Length: 240
Length: 308
Image 1: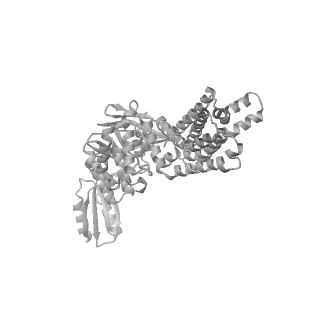
Image 2: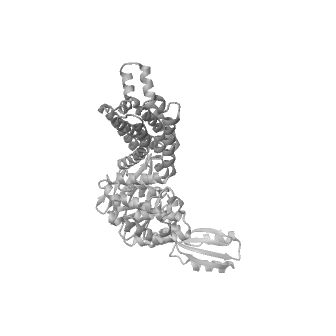
Image 3: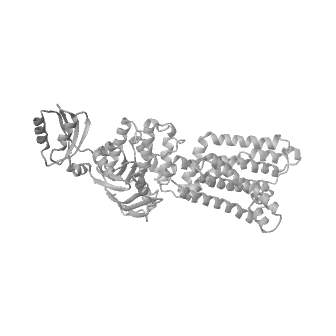
């Protein structure tokens, strides 16, 4: 675990030394703040202190934010040749991947922590079930884990960061929108059930309502592991 | 720690980059890899650094083999890649701390090791600068510092002075010589003067094979099978002089360098100076220059790499 910790520290240091993360945080808070408090469908319009609206806004904003955080993660290492430097040190590929994954996840967790004032405001406006609030944040972190692993996989495919951004976006759309749409087209039967199962929304919907099912947890963890394993495969394959 | 390479072979898509090479690098010695671009130097070094796996053959660092103790080997070698990739967005000192932590250097030693490296590589004034802001020479120093930070037994430097100005080259050479006194240093270059001044042992590679191997003086002695002279003869037509010189006994090759100046290669046992003198006397020509040429590493290099 030593090397993983070293990579996490280094990644966080580099991230918080660059402007990108602050721009990303500002953009995230501006967008979520606007949608939550000022837009036509703001929290006040529903007349009740509902958290699901809040988590829905976070869910969609993170959908756009995370590809921007992950696009550089592996492609830039390959472009700059720093893999050659790293892999001549006593570090294994999986340690590097885990380090980068947790570093980005921590950046997202900090971003979500910055939205706590929203939560506190809603809680002070009416009765809020804090267990539901906790589940909502947990669900968001799990979804973010999936987005990050998809982003890192896309980043491992190409040395071009912009291409990595769009590949992440395309895979995310598949998981968030397309699979649900295909399942609806199929109507019923095995294929419909399969695509429904593959859709991230299907698994996320219940969590902010306070229902944590092991089936959903297994789904999220499997997606994370599969995409990180694929990223590892592509790093080893085209390392130099 | 001695490094022994045995029958190392590596191919990329049917092209042999390294073709069954064997050599030994001893502790306290600087071994120089010399060769034209694409000769297989970088591939050999990447295999030694554990970045590529050979198709065949073995490398042992002391008692450790690349097939069995690859992880252990990475902690006893220091490697400077050819492109010298660094994290431009980090500052020098943070970068060196990061590398020392990757090497698992004990916490209480890290600061002193980082400061030692900064001093050794002359980075004192730039330690807080971002790596992206450094000049090429200073980047190279950071590259060498990261390769040496864990006090490795074997140091592998791939073209450490490429693209540097003469002052920077002098600085880097000084560092290499210093570390070469205690450790096994393997460096590659296609700059001959660098190898000639820095290395104790020279290996010339071409098309993936070792075409010459030995100390600089050994290589020079081997190629002294030919004796080389620079001659200037005046007082006649160039073409006549050229023909007459060519007809002298023992002359192997003659080349017109400039107007009536020639470079002549002959067997070492014939008294060529006497024949030339007699020739000039017969034809009423006179000698304007007669200089024996010592074989330089450059000539050996050219000869062995062109024959391939």
